[in-house]
Length: 140
Image 1 (cartoon, rainbow, N blue to C red):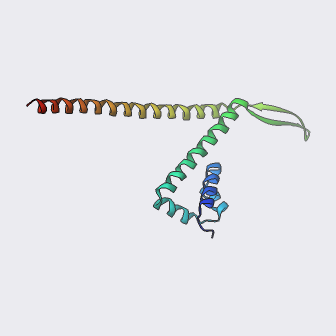
Image 2: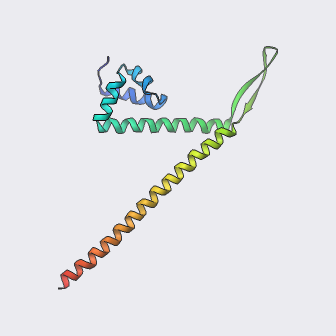
Image 3: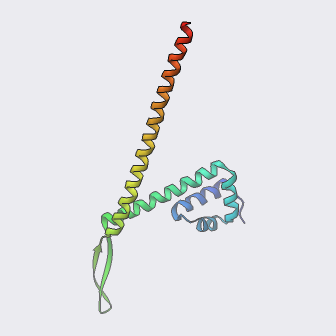
């Protein structure tokens, strides 16, 4: 088996992002899956890089799905064993699923932003209370 070094880790992460497969990525670098999973468990930086690689892989899949939705896919048309034309087909099912993913991402982002705003508002209220109480202490 290959030793884990920065070059192998980088290659693993690139392959993981492209393939979204730990099996393929581990084979590409010659490092066992168990070693990689152990390293992920024990190394927070590697764990974060692994998650980022998967996120980038998700983005690549989304981009490819969007390309197929917008441009369609060419399918050959055969007659008596010979290709005589091609037809561009579009997938409504792919479009619907892509829209569901995009709507879910938007809802998640809005919920996160709302929670952050609520937290900031609560913090401002608490600081006002503390400020008001400390003013009373200083006036005594």
